[in-house]
Length: 291
Length: 262
Image (cartoon, rainbow over all chains, first blue to last red):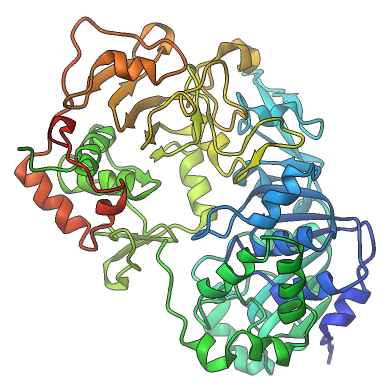
């Protein structure tokens, strides 16, 4: 039987400088943060990161990993402004920015192996001034001028799921699946972190088909990472940790604050991380946030 | 003595945005627009669909600051479906940008130069798509010339009635800007060529004060009505829709709706 299990460091070893990497989830929900922290610890550099951004983008920006950001927003939701992203952008971080729906469209184009998909989204805005976007004329009688959203091909996608088996079959149990399926299809390699890696039978796939977002054939590697989305949520297993997100946000105050945060929460192994953020019982008891 | 707050006046004014929309998704970003949408559903337009801000439609609407009561769920609104909904036009959002200009172009992305902004904020989020696919209204809790800017906004996230930016010289078919609710007045786009017009003035506010706090010229009708005060029935509904009192912290000190009584 196929066995795609690996460690966080094994995933990092399969990535290279300069790659374009998509990160799944949305803002403070179901971000593969254990893997993001592994990237932050690594020697990888000059990455192009594509994400519906939250602390994943912020942490990689703060640790100098991002050469270019492809994004529609970066936010911590309940803390609207992501402070590390804010600092990086104000310092001139190169970006390709898209509307949320255009970003989805770019992933879909890549998933369909198309060069672009047409849209009206962006017309009338400053997005159209970016060199990455072109116009295209409808070949039909309407002759309308549309925008062409280029395919967002990814060298790798990093996704967090609730359950996986060793072959890469996954269940994403959260209330909103976001665009992880399209990221998986847009990427050459897909690495998933899972709350639990279980025997296939325990996925109860016949009952859970709607939580299986993509085929195992797309998955390159599976890492068991309990609380691997923390401080973002992996509901229903656990909710986002607003107190920790405040601690994280405060790390943008100055260089010393960032060094302290990295020492306590980034340059540590999984066991030390869990202890540093208050332990399993605390994380299981986090209450659901209001939006 | 007025018996309503500024927040309650603005909720009532915001609610009018959705009166004639029929059965659409109503999205109010921020406490007061969200309560405005909730009030519209409770009064003039019961067909509206509102989400909990995450991914469930609930009926009745989920109060600000509360997690959805799952027993009240009536539909699913993950982001994928929300994009499909908005591209189909069956939505009316009221959003709170940082800047707006005379064309109705709006900005939540950045202040200053694009390459290295003075202040980086959110990104464009879903504003570009929203702006040309379904009706949009706006909410500004602090009406001043930093928000209502001269010239164009620093980054056009939402398309407005600016022909210089239209492709093919045609207004995008779905571009439909409705009202702007502020702490001073309600504005709309019913001036010549969609110019921004004062629709009503809040109790105790004059046209000149609104114009002085706006970075571009406003259309001044011969007669400007006073923004309607909430009725006792509306106030009772607002209290029921906001049991945690989130509206009371929208403005420092929760000032009265008629400023002459402040």
